[in-house]
Length: 280
Image 1 (tube, rainbow, N blue to C red):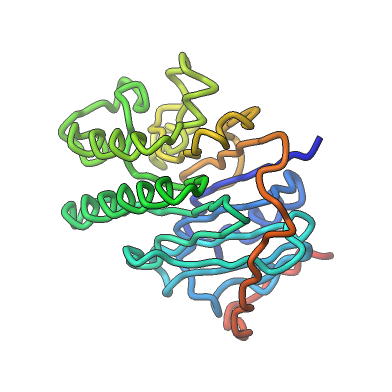
Image 2: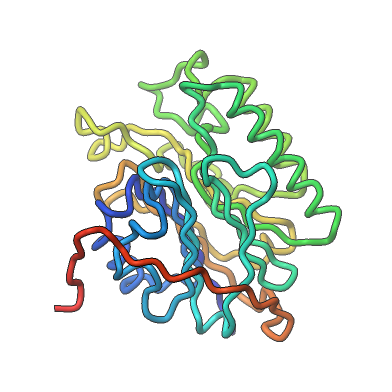
């Protein structure tokens, strides 16, 4: 039976995580890999990752801040897929790939620590976007770093503070509104009773080793997509980012390859960064 594997990972700097991104591609072979906080313009992405063998790649960043990427398997998608950025995209935080009537977004919601109002506006725009796509009959998969712990259990008990940005009742209410457009949180769908399901850990006091963290990285799916989901897991032990990768697996065809809209190739840009030889 046909399957689909989608991974999402906030890498906290793709140049620092080059070998680890490449290792994940080789080890897990995701059909779609959503990356956040790449902290690189397209020409700063290491050559080995600008368009890895077997993948269409779209890097959406502006220097050393924010940025997202989408890597789509050529085995899954025989033509370069169409990738767009919604009108509410700011600071290179959203890329959406269209696979027939299935749209997969790589998202990096603002932290809100420096500009809380901008975070609220971004989430409200995302809610509107999800509602529009739902009304148009599109199926959605929203993947990435949401920078909101949706429920109290999504934060370790030692770190719970309803006054902290990312844990406030207002932010959680916004995520509830997002869910109201037929979206399911797959991580919680498959592990409803897991109070240790975290994806981000502060880089001190051995919080990661002790699994004292927050659950910020999600895969949200429309109803029809949720029905085909078979698992959604987070990996704490991989990589040196402060986030762990999250992977969802689906069974059955989620789109018709014959109805793919072909996108345009990005203009080639020469990398200015020192390169790591990953093929020795």
